[in-house]
Length: 407
Image (cartoon, rainbow, N blue to C red):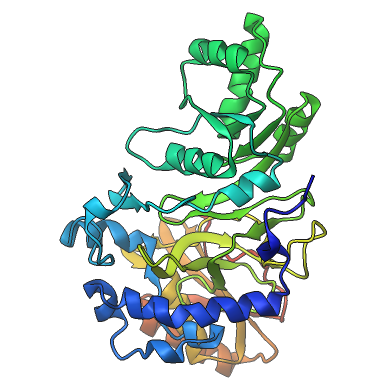
């Protein structure tokens, strides 16, 4: 049994990088035919964007902006040139955000993730993600069928009816949340129903702690995690190495300092930003609001694409202090004004009945003059007074947290 979906997964990383950035100018040209991208990328020469450094100079598009943009220019915010009728299916996600499904094979790029989790052509898969209005169920359904699997479109809930389907069709695979898989197994055990055919699973959409992973394994199920969104489909997935998640092909992932579009130092935690090479619905530097960090080297499974640690929290750490919003991009602005500083963390606490801000800043320098100038910048940028605490290089944790609200 082959271990890889195709030869793309084991390319030399430099060859993959060259191939992606050779395609990027044409994608940018296509994207800029849409009015929203034309406005955002004014002055950009697509032919010049052939490296990560050049890409990093383009503005990020925050997913949190999409509901307002879609409302202002329905349905897709002016980011898509093709008419809604040219797509296969049309969905909505909370916000609302409107997402189209392309007509191409495996439009959500999920077949690789299922293959890495042990799914193979001819398998029967019980898909319990929702098929109602949101794309989750269809992401996994289309991906499994692209791999050559037969899909039971079960959706969540209705366990009694699902037991009938499982006992009749004997699915070997499961896709859905890890929580619902446990509910299914526990309910079957209590009801004396036979769900023993399920041997492997690809789960997403909820936390999958080590304890639950071990429980699934003890019950004879090899379960793997995937990370995806309704906008982009499958972004990264776990492999047999069980060392982080491998980024999907045809995507350019960047990890940036929260609140900015600036790439982090290798290994640092930051916000996930993705550029997809789908000409029907291109995404240029879509900032997802999720935190992760890159892992060094190639995966022991043989796949050579970038690996990430997985989901590590949310990047949007905006908080309100004394009635005013303080945002990560403001803390990033302070860092730009003082390049002698390293990591920054604004800690918000309460002293009596008053909000208190303390900006902790890594630096190799120290002393009252630097502290005073940083405090002045803190006030100028946030319009709020606060304390500044200078700490040594490496003193702050590498967790991507820029604002810590400890009230």
